[in-house]
Image (tube, rainbow, N blue to C red; front, side, top):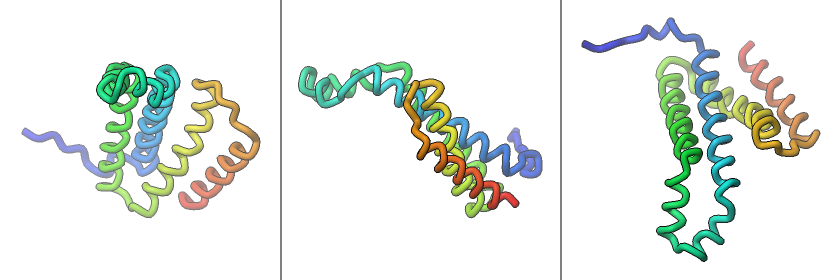
Amino acid sequence: MSFHIPAHAFSDAAMIAAVVVFATAGDILIAAAMRRMGDLDEIRARRGLAGTITAVLGSGRFLSGVFFMAMSFFSLLFALSHADLSLVAPASASLTFVTNAIAAKVFLRENVDRKRWIAALFVCVGVALMAV
């Protein structure tokens, strides 16, 4: 028995939102893991390539980030099977840029300067124009 969800049950916005949320979560978790881990060149110098790979793959945050990036990828595949590429790809990529800036500020305590906020605002305007 197969389970099929009709295409009309999902709006374009919901499918794009899923891609964006999963991608942002993945990016933040991977960035947090890599910052916690430190410089990979230093780890490689101390522990070799195998030790570096073990350190990366042994990080729960990193693996969680990879999981969310995979969910983003499969959400993108689902969205592309139901909506136009010319909407899904630019909207999801652009909105991920915006949500990454917000999440980096909130969760990673990054200093997001005014130029990046203005760029994010222009991205939002562009996405709004595509949706109209």
